[in-house]
Length: 306
Image (cartoon, rainbow, N blue to C red):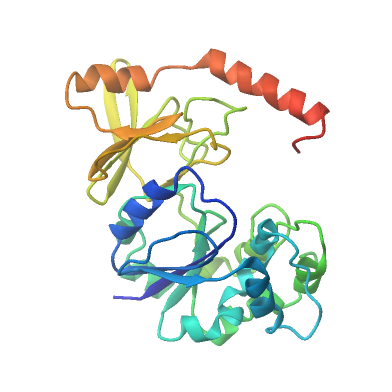
């Protein structure tokens, strides 16, 4: 089996989805998750912790480059993600793949989708900020340095004080460079669900797979997207689901063996009137959508959001 390590430099407070993330990470025991953090993250058999302050992390990153980097706040770490294998050389030794991800995520059965056949055939897996993997070899690990006309230069990304979104698609950065110039090396399937932001739709819509008014069920190590269509419940298995801009979510789970992810809370799977409760949780929440659209416009006018 191909070995995988996923890096999580995270400083400040943990998102409300963290315990859900952790429960789903523990149910993927063949994958290692490594933290560099000042948060109280408990180590486990596949969760490795390096406790440090942000300034300590910044110094580790600076030692990898012979020019002054700009890493003045935790969010700027995203621009350094494509260089993780280059920066963390000692930690990627012995692994076949390395990568990064977000913590406002719940995983399903990762190996069910990212099989050894996929890992043998491709060097770049997915390419999204919420979960991306790269093959561990010198050419791949230094590809972020390769200059190609029309794409952001890595020195610009690592020295500019602005967030350059160098790790993401759509900004002529690292992911675009791989997808456009090395398409045969890229696994570009979309078996994951990127949930709509509240200002787009308070209830969950899968922006990647088209289902609307959904919730998510996690049982053992499987994740399912659930919807009701023409009065009938449908399920689709997911690699993972990503819940961006959902800081208001509450974690009310007492048993992480079987739980639901709803638009405003993570809850235990119901024991009674299951179909009725699932149908209610999948309902259209148009008034809440209008509220978040209004709130976003007000905050934008006040200069409190972008």
